[in-house]
Image 1: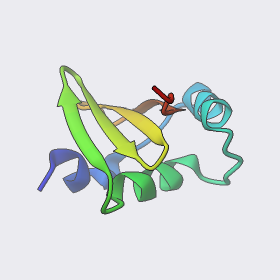
Image 2: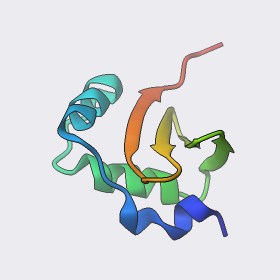
Image 3: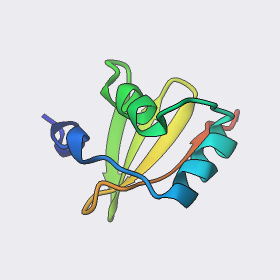
Image 4: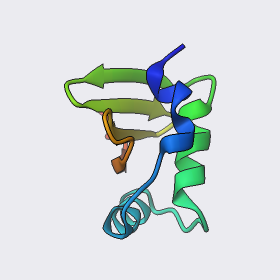
Length: 81
């Protein structure tokens, strides 16, 4: 099983990060961390690691998580190619 999935309980975010995610994703949810956990844990999510970050590509967004601290760094909507 993927290391990110095994450590979902460690996911957290800073106050500034929470503001950034809600702005980038146009989400007005009570708990952005739980929203991200659900997206990452979805069966159709593709998780990759590049350097110090995990990238979870789910539905129409990409969530970036620090691989050491499990801090949600950012998330954004996928751009159409």
